[in-house]
Amino acid sequence: MKKLLSKIFLLGAILSFGCSEDYLETIPTDAVSETAVFTTTQNAMTALNGIHRSMFIRYDSQGQPGEGGVMIMRDVLGDDLVMTTTGNGWFVSISRWQNHTVETSGDVRFVWRFYYKIIGNANMIIANIDNAEGPQEEKDEIKGQALAYRAWAHFNLVQLFAERYTPGGGNGQLGVPIVLEPITEGGPRNTVEEVYTQVNADLDEAIALLDESRNAKSHINVNVARGIKARVALTQGNYSTAAQFAAQAREGYDLMSPEQLYDGFNNVDNPEWIWGSRQIDDQQTFFASFFAYLSVNFSSTNIRSNPKAISSKLYDMIPETDYRKGLWDPNASDPELRDPFIDEVTLSSFAKIDYMNRKFVAQANASSVGDVPYMRAAEMYLIEAEALARGGNDSQAAQVLFDFASQRDPEYTLSTNTGDALVEEIMVQRRIELWGEGFRFYDLKRLNLPLDRTGANHVSTVINGKFEEPAGSNDWLWRIPISELNANENMVQNPQ
Image (cartoon, rainbow, N blue to C red; front, top):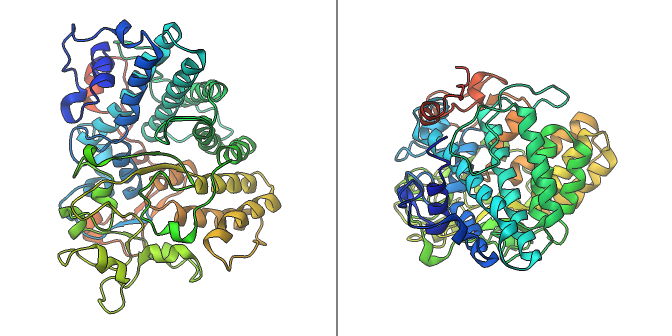
């Protein structure tokens, strides 16, 4: 971690907003001083904007577009998103459960460094903002956002690189290093329990500092911080806390209309988006983009030959009256039966494969521009419902589920399920609603469920026969990258 956390790297990253190799140590030691960056709250906000931008820029390769790239990795590791062909190779090894278990993998290196980059830059802000000149409310907003980013990044790291959090357990298993200062030396791995304790401490402080205001939805306000807190509490099995913060997080954010459901999931102005990155035309990252791999229409080699599809098993669980059923086309290969929209937005050279998605729509065939969704009100409804149900509050859970599902399906009626049956109903809704948004690997791992791709439309040659993985195996842990092992004598690798 020594190279990753050097102050030159941190300051260079937040000021240059660079991409590709620009986020490495390429700024000379006399190019910028730490004190100059944080002289004023205005300068500090510029540094914070560097973190916002780092969420969607290109890193070492075009398949690593910040958080959007990690979202795709997390979903192709699951069972609900189908890679219809090998395409031109992007994300195939991940979908086969090969890449994330190799310590020399470039993707493993990227994911580790991406989240620790955010932590490092957040730490620079946290360490210096109190001494900056400017109104106290601006200091609070900047510090609160930095604390929330630090919590969010540690939360992602511990879910990927450590064993799952076991509710009610000691959770003394190795987690990831907690980094709270702009240090230059890598430390040992903290326990999973210690990481979650720090994540919650950072979130509680962030929530106390933030309010509903912010400059844009790419920024973190109190709703976003509460939403992250709800995710953490759900993962820990703290169900009353999860339900409480999920309900608070969605306050002021209405569920989208049926018409908006078909707008392409590409616009942060959608009323139910709580947090997302806005990408504007002159910041297009071309093939290094979430929409360059998941949209229906961007003319990349990957999408033209490998349209992403929904599992046929999950699709069959969607009622015919549910508006979301139309976000995937089970008859795409038949020109007479497929959704006319697919022909309208794609070119003749695009493969048309059954169950392909039309949920995500890029700006145009020649433009991969699209806003990336990180948190929506729908997720918060589903967290609240799941937490209430797992906490034994069936009637409340059913009502929250109804408030959500009836907006997606006008024929949906208040559920009479209880116990495990109600939880399963909520989980199916979650899988449908959040398809492609990076949640499935996390859900399988937190619930200690096996991977099961059998009986659906997964193609054996694409996933190299990887249809199943038992719950709790070592392969649910991403390997620590070799670069970290070489640089940090305190680091211990995950078991093979």
